[in-house]
Amino acid sequence: MSDFRRNSAGYLANHMARLFAVGLSRRIQPLGLAPAQFMVLLELWEEDGRMQADLVAALDVEQATMANTLARMERDGLIERRASETDRRSRLIYLTDTARQVRAEAVAAAQAQNAVALGRFTEEEKTQFLDMMRWVIGNMRRE
Amino acid sequence: MSDFRRNSAGYLANHMARLFAVGLSRRIQPLGLAPAQFMVLLELWEEDGRMQADLVAALDVEQATMANTLARMERDGLIERRASETDRRSRLIYLTDTARQVRAEAVAAAQAQNAVALGRFTEEEKTQFLDMMRWVIGNMRRE
DNA sequence: AACACTTGCATAGCGCGCTATGCAATACCA
DNA sequence: TGGTATTGCATAGCGCGCTATGCAAGTGTT
Image: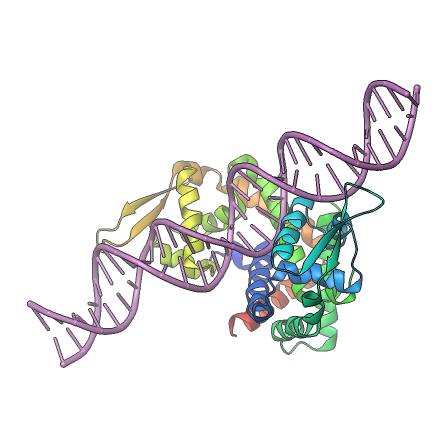
């Protein structure tokens, strides 16, 4: 393995994210969920009836990405979209009962994945690692 | 933003990796490279004339992923594949002159991206962050 | 030599990122 | 009020992950 790659934050970030995605995917697939759908659900479980643009801002993905993810979620029976009464461009996003019912199990699955990943980190190490990731994210977003 | 998401290593890893990918992509696009291609080149710049399976092991991606990336690299004139003389199933992978010539610039671009990302981390913090990522990767790979 | 097993790779199909583009509805402003 | 700018969303096209599958060429066994 090339020295540069072994010591490159970018490569390690990519590798780590892929492993998280595969692990989470395996755990939530039985619930009928995919990773990106789960992230959207985390927002909608807090509050639904929201605009697409709102979710775009919350998850920091491109609008087109969100549009496609929402289309798959509608196809899979996780959300419904109803025309907004105040803005005819907008279709507000509501959870289906199905989506509400998988919440506890899905969150537990994600927690299990995080637990495997962070392994035997102490609480201090965990918070430090999360802090560092948030810092790095901030650095790149600011660019 | 949901509390769970804000404190989830998996979500932060995904977000961070996306920002790395976009940033690197922007920097190496003028060289005619895409991120996954660059990762493969890092291996081939060390030594080419290798088998696909060798690169698969080095980068820890699925064989099908590598096959597709190599197909794009061949299409883009970065690599050539020549039949192995000892194993007729295998097509050994060689760099083109084009690929050799962009090495320095591409590596500099990646270093620039890493520098932006790690921002004002001290050397100690950088090594600690990389160590932690390697540890997390190890935890998930072992599963 | 015949058989099964393994290895090396390609292909299909899909999820989920991205950029670029377009359109309709709304908001704003002269 | 009419024209322009902005907003909300959809679509096309592509990169790059993944799983599943298939096939040809090696390897090993009996």
